[in-house]
Amino acid sequence: HLIGIFGPDRSGGSLTTPWAPVFRNCRFTNSTITATAFPPSVIEIGNAAPAFLNCVFRNLKVEPGSGYNQSYTNLRGPITIEGDETTYSDPVFTDCVIAGNSLGLDANAQFNNIYFEGGAIRIGRGTAPQFVNTRIDSNTINTQTEGSNDSQALGGGVFIEPYYSNGRKIRFRNCSISYNTVIGKSPRGGGVYTKYPQTRFINCLLVGNSLQVLGGGDAAGGAIAYYSGGWGTNNGSAD
Image (cartoon, rainbow, N blue to C red):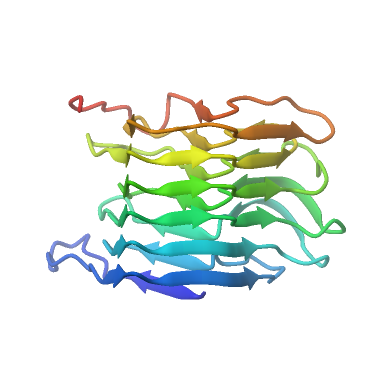
């Protein structure tokens, strides 16, 4: 990783203080992960609640090389946010730029039933991040080829995994999610792919996001692909 922020497991209730470092006016740029066996993300956040204020995340890439040959797994975007079933990871991005990042493969790589998740950001289980006045622009998933069987490319800017919400909301407030691209078999969500029942977009701009189909399959959600029926559908209260 360029950065790994991993808080303690609080599932037993013994720790109640949030793991919440603050990054102000920072630049996270020009870093590439090329590992061919289960590559990590460039930035990983787990069981933590960092605050990023006026930070830039640019030209971060997860691009396994030609030796990549995997089946029935997922490739995660350059920024991954994870919690668990009992501990939420709640980072906040305020006045940030998340642009020009990418997830993809070498043109000679082999893959079968791979899910490409998030050209910039992958939001996993047990997380409720907040994005305020933040640009998520010009990020890309490019699988290079269609791969084998049911491979899918999901979320050119952001991928959000399905899981129980328990009323907790993932909010994008006053954000631009624009000019992101998904290129692959069965691309979904040029800007955002989400199956989380509490995803909120408030006063946001979504423009110029796109999908390009390689080989077979179809496409859905040029800007947002939103699917219901995740793990738990407690919708909580409205904003």
